[in-house]
Amino acid sequence: MSNEVSDCDTKHLVDINITSKKMLDKYNGRYYKLDNDRNLYLLNSKRDSHLIGKTLHFRSPITCTCGDTVCHKCFGTTSLLNLDISDGVSGFEVEEVTKVVRTLITKNSFNCWKLLLQDNQQLRLSLG
Picture 1 (cartoon, one colour):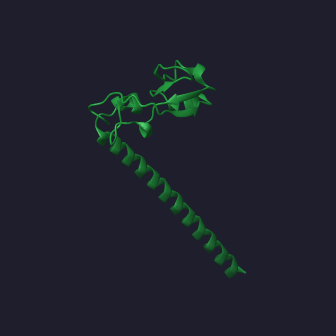
Picture 2 (cartoon, one colour):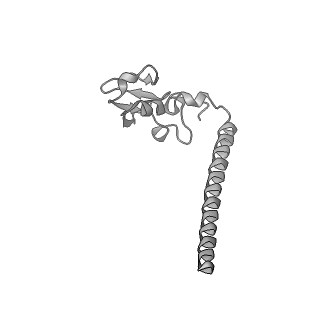
Picture 3 (tube, helix red, strand yellow):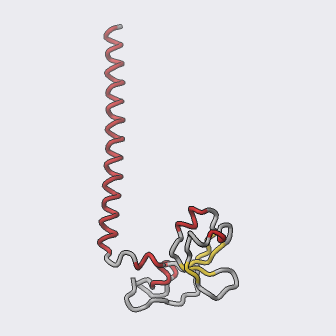
């Protein structure tokens, strides 16, 4: 995140067709333009439900012209939430640990069922 540039004034925008409320929520806090409009607006998903079904032209970190950093307008207002990247890293790590634990539980459950089925087949064969 750039500490020096708040707006790079890029002309390269990303076109997104907003198809649902869920998608509108996903882009909440991002800056966009409408067709044939020079103004830049901040998306508020609670207020802007009239935008569902329209194509919006979003500012994006991908098209930011700040070089190795990203300006605040291209990143959106979420840049103001986590000023310390370590908060995001720890949140990511917690999510990853949860995914790993779920995967291991599923894998171990599958192995237990597999062993039970094998034991059941051997029992049937021995009882004949």
